[in-house]
Length: 421
Image (cartoon, rainbow, N blue to C red; front, side, top):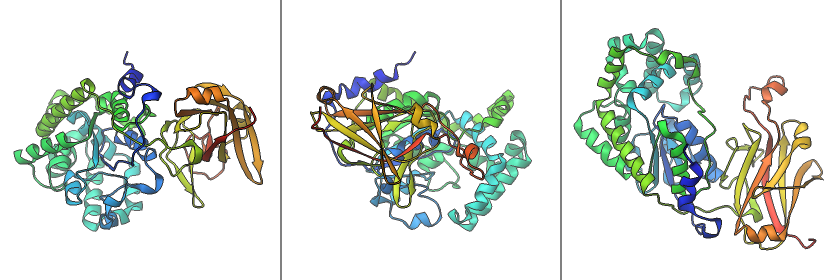
């Protein structure tokens, strides 16, 4: 059985030898559709400061924005976008998938009813030609089975199911005809990436990504954008699978190179530097280096973050204190009052009692940390939060469309020296 912690710890080493603080490294996520990229994107979004993130960079009016001013950018853009915007010096992260598996997933994803409504609601995110093409692709995918889509709509099949990974990595746009020069360029760009993961080895990929970035090990929370309804339709006849292989001959070469790069990273791990937020004055606008958190929100100008979907979450922070301390955790809301009865807090794996403080309408949690524990922490504190249960707002509040499973939302953390024990 794969020991993910061993992958990470083999490079990061002990807490005492952790990397020194540094500036936030500028990073770009080239998100190839249907490679489980949404799962990775969820992790990436929280690991960078909230006000320094630029998503859907390739869409509509976003193309007028200068992406170089942000610490993290992402989108379904071509590698050429990074070249044109002068971003090739960023840490470029991407995830690759077996080409046939990616094509199958993409086709059945296009057949979902919700996509047409989504495109219409986001029509401002596309120019008119993109919008018309998106409508045509969705309509034809819904009208045809896979075999008929490939046979009757060769152009649409090529731009959605054929050599898509090569197209994003080596072509100037998503509609250009491909030739061997595009594959050569895609291979070159792939080798220039800071990190290349594999969908089929997602847990290993995330562990390696965290190790490379200098983060604590943050495991994925499962696929966040999977097409569960159509998994039973993926058993295709051999002749149809061969047709998909024929459409993805260049992608197969590119995927094999991605596999080689991945194996090289496993054999020769390298740890980069990344600043760990200070517990003395932590806000949710800063990097959220932890597991078991939803993507942060902004409420009335204040950054907050909900725990979930599981009841257990944790957050990694740094500290220079070597004496007994008090940690104060600001609360925005709990999803249900029963959480106060079930709530457990821990520091570096040790359960500690907590006190609920009220300041007007605001609630805070206070944890006293013994001096011995602070001295043994070697500059790192891992706050563990166990709410015991999570709930969907849609199940609790009439009219709420929110189907996330939530526990509590925090607004920030303060750590200060204690003089009382």
